[in-house]
Each structure stands twice: as C-alpha cells, then as structure tokens.
Length: 237
Image (cartoon, rainbow, N blue to C red; front, side, top):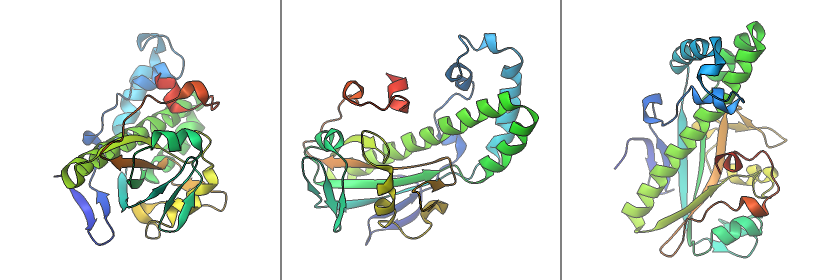
C-alpha cells in the first residue's frame, strides 16, 4: 500500500512517511511564479535558487496525515462529521455531492523552513521573496502527495472515488472553521498547532477535506463563480 508512521485503524487515522524526493515540483518554477517571463531572464537568481534549495532540503521536516470518517451527513451548504457542523458553503457542498465518507487532512513542511528563510530575507529581500514562494510550492506538493494517498486508500479499502480537495479559507469556507477541523485530530498532530485566529503553525501548512464515494465526480474547480482572486487553483487554470 504505502509507508506510514501511524495507522490507527480504530480511528481511521494515518500519518504518512514523506521525504522530499517523493514530491513533484520544480524549484526553478518559483522564478516564473514571481513574474519573470523565462527562467533564463532571472539571471543571477537561477544559481542562487539552485544553491539555496539544495541547502533547504536537509532542513525540511515534512509531515502529513489524514483521518477518514464514514457515514457523513452532507447538505446543500454544510456537512456534519462526528457532531461537528462544517459550513463549507454551496460551492464546496456541490462538489462533494455523492460523498458518504470524507477524509480530513493536515500537512506541513516544518519549522525549519522559517528558520532558514529569516536570514535569507535579511541578506536579500528579493531572494527571501522567491523562497517564500518556494515554501508555498513545496507545501502544495505535499498536499498533492497526501491527496494521491487518500485516493489510493479510497480505492483499495472502500472501492470509492474522490472529489477535489478543499481547504478552509477557500471557496467561501471560513478559515475560522480550522478550529473545528483540528478537533478531529490528536493535539499537535503532524506537529501543527492553531492560533486563536485560526492560523496554522508552522506557517507553511495546509489542511482540508476530500469527499469519498462510489458516485462522486472530480470536477474542474469552479473559479468562475468564486471571487477569491489569489487562490492557488486560479493560478493553475
């Protein structure tokens, strides 16, 4: 199946074993994300990105896990899981249609990234900006990897398909509902904590949910009806 650090069958709780080479991303793509028309046009920054990325890899503490909940209750603008009502809104609920099971996940690249980033910013704000983008790219690659493992589990264990993944703060799902989401996991699961304002620590962390079911469909993200201008999914369109 796949490597894991925790497999609590009673709770349907899994923590994945992930190393940087498992992830699919190209660190040089941050140059294009930052606005340069081509990699070559960034000049000096190409070598700097290569060098600093190599140094960063040894400092990452990638952690990710998820918990599967069966017999969820899904309505037109919310779902209920273990007596917790998640007000996901109509956009997400529509995409979850057909789900009778849900996987909630959290993942992080660890505190080492922030420790690495601070002196980079102090010596060169431009390089610091690029590496902050790189941190966002890496954590999205971790979320992609986690999603792939949820899809694999859904197929092998339940014979189910999966929906897209959704996170609090996107598609009009309030980020405040992080507090509800984190009650579904053991305290400090995957080394992630939550502030009173619902911000995750370490900063480069992602949480969310994926619907599972026999009849679910994976739709194209509905960017045309969502007003979140800076959503990473909109950038991928």
